[in-house]
Image 1 (cartoon, rainbow, N blue to C red):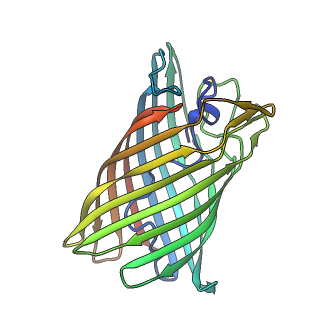
Image 2 (cartoon, rainbow, N blue to C red):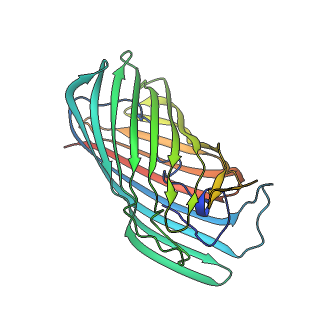
Length: 283
């Protein structure tokens, strides 16, 4: 969702296809067969760019991204390899503003669309696992001469594994681990390195549908970027984020999660904070 094409930083523009920290409680628990709607809402703000040593670059920089991303999930009756087969698609609607040293640009467009398939397993009444493969398609607009780009102009293939332990009046643990394989941006001949990252949540069920806890993400770029097949050294990205997280489950079958997360330990990327809302409901 975030591409700052005029800056040299980890991965092209210092951004990623996946919006880090998007997931929260219940990420690994696939619901019963049927159609489900989800709506993600995000506000991300950053005013610092960190270099390879973690120092802020001497730039007058600010970034603001507001996103609404509807998602359609279809859990089928079909079983494959012992798990329920499901499909999903996400279409992000992005309002992005970037300012660097007095220059500013704002765009409001549809971003890069995600499609994917997965399998859900119920290990017990409280413990659940989901595995899958997501594909990020370069459907958003990209212009190498623009300051801000919502589209990243390359494909990303992302294997996914998620685990959920849910207890309405006890411990709740959620982890979604992902690994990104990025293809080359044909307009810039830039290929971003591979990325390992995970969203997490840890909370305690206090009854009446409420879970209170913390959540965030961890991120590490694992391979170097390449430009015109030449390696870009000392620019691997890294970040960690944490903040309060809450979930409410209604008696009507829908649930809402919310969190705030502050980034720290950042290398070669923007550093800021994010607010997230996620509504899930049966159709």
